[in-house]
Amino acid sequence: MIIKLSPIRMDGVMTLSKSGDALTIDGETFDLTALPDGATLPAEAVGCRRVELPVERVNGQLVITLSLPIAVDAGEAACFPVDIVNPPDGEVRLPQ
Image (tube, rainbow, N blue to C red; front, side, top):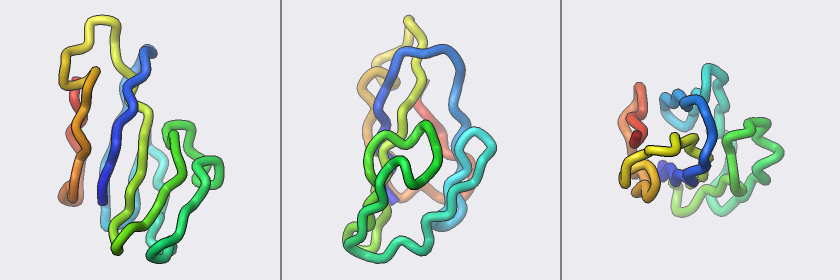
């Protein structure tokens, strides 16, 4: 799984955890296991406001882009986040 983060200035925080091909975003679970290789799922079809772009499965790996809320005084890691590649199951640490 590759999680891309798109920083956006807004109040609040996002919580994120992973279990296989399922992501729990802000307490709601989205299971993307059924997405076959080479397929694309429109962002709207996921049903999560944090999903910014279509979700794809490329070479067996899910690629998802999530909006990352950042504060006015956010650090460089949050303003220019690197992709999170193959995170282990459990809580996913997000830049602050």
